[in-house]
Length: 273
Ligand code: 8IG
Image (cartoon, rainbow, N blue to C red; front, side, top):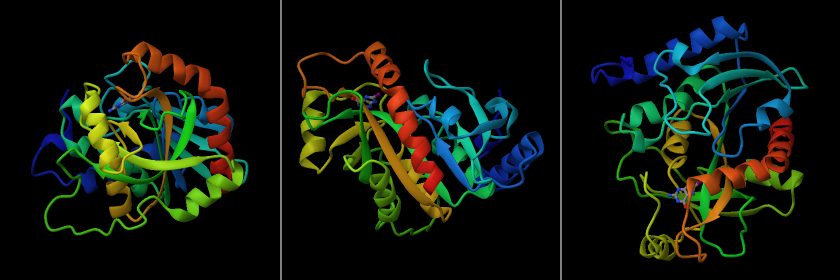
């Protein structure tokens, strides 16, 4: 299916504005103050945050694509929060490993900014490098190392990434759950998981969490002027940290097991942002 973002000459920000207009039309909600991308294990959080006002297939919104992975939901919903604000919930993440280019990876974030969001909450399922983080542990992202060798920004766009993962929002998350730990997220391109040597490299580089998303989206969110909160659900120990091989089925199971707890946590955080 043709995607307008694939035309090199197209303006991705104009397509994001079109997408935001379509969302406003179809949901009847003019402005979404906060936006969330729900990764593996986080899908249920949307139901606990408030009343779903409208849910549309991502494929009906300009620039979005159908999801490629089992366990990822291809919808965009508008959720009414208890205080009258609205959250835009993106269940349709495009990963770099799908091979459609980085514009599509960050289109959801740019659409959220165009829809009015000042806060972008990025969640994911990820591998843990610290052995004491058992599968099912949520971890705040304090910073990242981008190992994708690419950027969502084009041209001479020099954006400051100091405090990319907002200290204010991390503090707020800890006011909801004081035991939350934080770590440095290392984004690999995937889709293969790391070798044990690559996990040791990530640890040497200062990493605590390995994944295949989030860093590029966070950069685009900051460029769009949003405040970023990142939370990883550790679904597995990174390769070589535990003794078992990694499997996508186990990742999904860990997500399902942790879902009630982390969904409640996220809903309580979003209430306060
Ligand atoms: I879920 O161990 C999940 N996503 N790169 N490594 C990487 N991505 C992941 C992992 C992991 N687990």
